[in-house]
Amino acid sequence: MREFKRLVVLLLALAMIVAACGGDDGDTDDTEDGGATETTEATDGGDDGDGGGDDMGSLLDTVKDRGTLSCGTNETLVGFGFKDSAGEFVGMDVDLCKAVAAAVLGDASAVSFSALTAAARFEAVSSGQVDILSRNTTFTQQRDSELGLDFGPTTYYDGQQVLGTGDLFSSDSQVEDLDGATVCTNAGTTTELNITEAANAAGIEINLVTYEDFNIVMDNFESGNCNAVTTDGSGLVARKFQATEAGTEGAEDWAIFPSVPISKEPLGPAWAQGDALWGDVIRWTVYAMIIAEEQGITSANVDEMQANPPNGEVGRLLGSEGDFAEKQTAMGLPADAFYQVIKQVGNYGEVYERNLTPLGLERGLNALFQDGGILYAPPAR
Ligand SMILES: N[C@@H](CCC(=O)N[C@@H](CS)C(=O)NCC(=O)O)C(=O)O
Figure 1: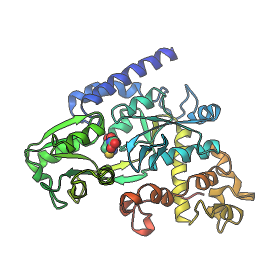
Figure 2 (figure 1 turned 180 degrees about the horizontal axis):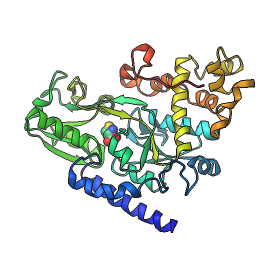
Figure 3 (figure 1 turned 90 degrees about the vertical axis):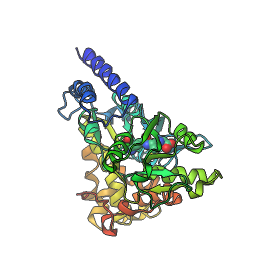
């Protein structure tokens, strides 16, 4: 019976992903939702949706038994998920997977990465191919409630913008300036619907063209087939950076606009719905990195901080000796889980500086709340 249920879950999830590839998964259009509704009950993570992941146990145990974390990420997005010339995955989303592996397994390198396109990423979660999806993925109502996913804390607050060549556009350009333009993006994203809505609101017509692979989107932009491309602002900054570094003609004049993004794109990790323990582990790994930045704990001083915690929160977070060693073990992790995260991967600020600062991305909204941003973690108490 369970096997049958799992098969139905998988088939329905597949059916919906195929639908998502053809358009976008964030569509609120009635027709598409009709297909998705059926999937709602079925893709609840393969369990009864009671938060226990009861059929299969928690992924926490699976990952511990396997000895590696399976992470779905991007391989073409510089700064977030990118496979470098040595074949190594690097970037902020990649570092989050390393942090989870450090917390659970004590080894940030115990990760097996799968490179996923936007259109393929959700099936990789529902089929169990990956334990965690960390691939510049926007937390949306539909993905959370209908696609069988749960989302963790936002690791990068983003918003959608447009990239155009410097001869036609400037940083002061507006959506209205896209009237009659061919605008390109990748399939299976929030991006498609947002730009369509923004064009409607501006009373203009655009010719929206989607490709599954963002490299193809950029090829078409560079060859002039697309007048503009649109996606998360961070992705546009990353692509402009990459093209400028590669000496692409005119790339340094490419314009990113409008200055106020057309959407909210809170990016963060996701996993199969209904596994409360696994959710706690991912959530608190992210929070630990944020709290570490708040408390001034870095990969360089974490040994000293663990040995002589300056206050209770630091002691609890790092699983220091004595009364402090309880918090992480209560959630099935080693007492020093977050010490390992900070030692091997770094605090949020270190990870940001390593991956995103070189692209010219300012902290902005992604600064700690006490620095004027909106990053805020609950207390380690
Ligand atoms: N955050 C959006 C968009 C995700 C997305 O696929 N973005 C594109 C543009 S940043 C991407 O990852 N492309 C890969 C690349 O730029 O190489 C979503 O979750 O739907």
